[in-house]
Image (cartoon, rainbow, N blue to C red; front, top):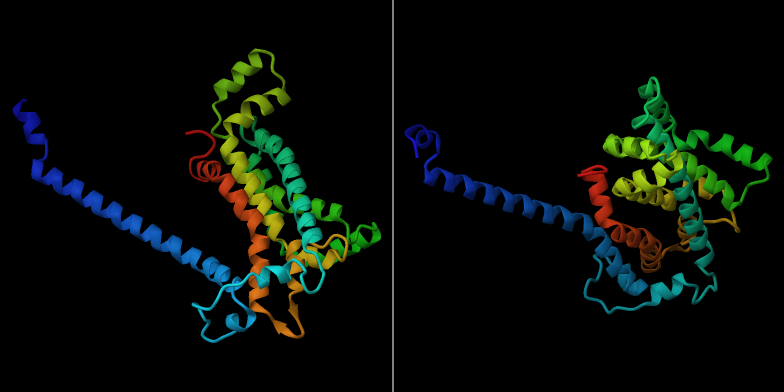
Length: 294
């Protein structure tokens, strides 16, 4: 080894201290991440524990953590005493969320393709227009939407929710999908065009597989927003098209708030979103952190 190389190389004790410092910082960051995760998980764990208690134990102050466990809250949610089934609202929420999410993807992917891979003129103005539609508070458009739905005879109709959820989630989906599709290698698309592939073939067989993490992240976020929406569903639906969040509001009665039953209902309503999140966890992480390709 030459003298110049020796002079430029840091001493071994110094390199060891640097490696040790990196390991300690990594351990500290890992500990902070675990603490943050536990803090966010604690309310859900407390809600789950409360749902397994009786109403008398759940209403104590402070709450009785070591009280006996029971499934009575879940029996009440599924109509053991009232006979009111939660399945119609759950099916309505699932239908509106899945159909609107599918429509959002079918519309957002071609729009994002035009704004990223095949950019239109003044695409930044187009993106700002999409984003500006989210600046209006939802409650400000509630009365016009109600009047339009009433005149069209679409009140208490699941199709109305599908249309609303699609229009509400489409701007965010276009913004997300554009950032993902912008990272798709243009060489692949040019090669497909030379081979004679049309637009639909390029979108379905080339863009969709490459941008699968971004599509999964966009679909999951659209599904969550649709599933959790309450304001429009509460005002525009009734007996036929009521959704799961609307069904939850029925547990707040004049007799009071029954904590165990409400927590059991909240757990059951949250399960579809949790299952979808765990099922698409790997795709979601890739889509939100790395984009469409590594």
